[in-house]
Image 1 (cartoon, rainbow, N blue to C red):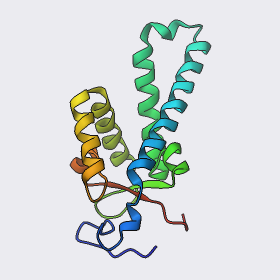
Image 2 (image 1 turned 30 degrees about the vertical axis):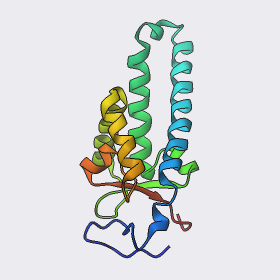
Image 3 (image 1 turned 30 degrees about the horizontal axis):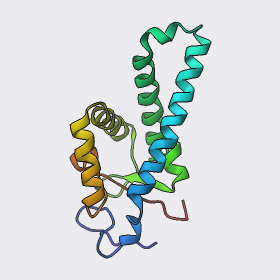
Image 4 (image 1 turned 180 degrees about the vertical axis):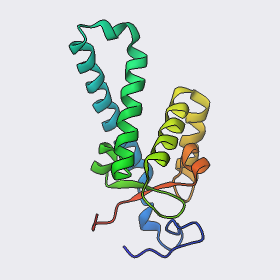
Length: 151
């Protein structure tokens, strides 16, 4: 895939539609995979903690999810689920995520999924926008794109 850089730095959705093709579906698949993985990690913590973490299970799950997403986004610009779905995030300059962008995106994502209204708005944006961006993506000026085969 050859990219034509726009003023934003992200591939142009009109001229390079292949970067955004099926991204919304792939994001859903990645979300399911990542949720299962974080639930398994949380369950392991509960078992290893002799079930004491059950008393604060939502906080344990939120913490595991935050660390999981931040570390994987800062290292690969994608979570393991996103890597399996062959997508990755890029900043408005077309660059991969660094630690600060991973922290901001994770915080925005967890905020959105914690409340119904922001999540619904995010899904609507992903389904209707040219770049399939969620609410957090729009605020931060980033997008999930199909990963190039060379990566």
